[in-house]
Image 1 (spheres, helix red, strand yellow):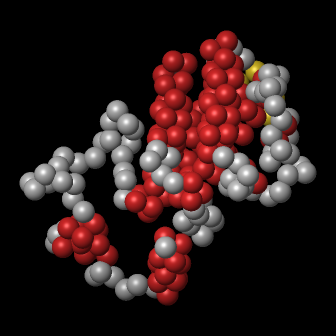
Image 2 (spheres, rainbow, N blue to C red; image 1 turned 45 degrees about the vertical axis):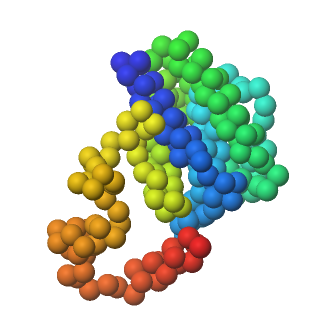
Image 3 (spheres, rainbow, N blue to C red; image 1 turned 90 degrees about the horizontal axis):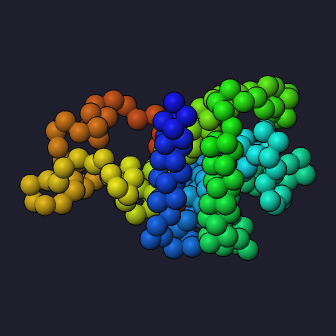
Length: 211
């Protein structure tokens, strides 16, 4: 069971990092939602998760402290990269955090008990923590899917398995404009219903952010 859980965690990590590939320093930092979700910030946040849940919880402190985590840190400082933080630094730290977490996962039994200070010092098992971090990592990988598609249209599950539909008859992937012309597409289905004011405002905001 532990090997299966670990595999799902690794898949989420790989997907998250893959979404950075081929993008400029600007694009990996660019916020594209109302809550400022951005690709490099997702990696930075996931680094903290790995260190806290697989380090602090089980009494295995990481080799360095994170200035953007803790009571003195700015709110949501782990969700975006400063101009002074390079992509290489953030990705490198994530990989080191993963290695530290993997040692915890491989060394401890699933029923090993740790304590979560930010959950009122609640007692948890490694099994519980693994499931929690898998859910969080995969959720953030999904966030990264959407942000990357908004940036340049790139999509896919993993480098080794994009999980996309087969090519169209003309040899390319179905484009957004092609989808909009098909009678049974989500876009055409949606036009049968009224658009509320809030949706229009959000659409306008997304357009501004994408520029």
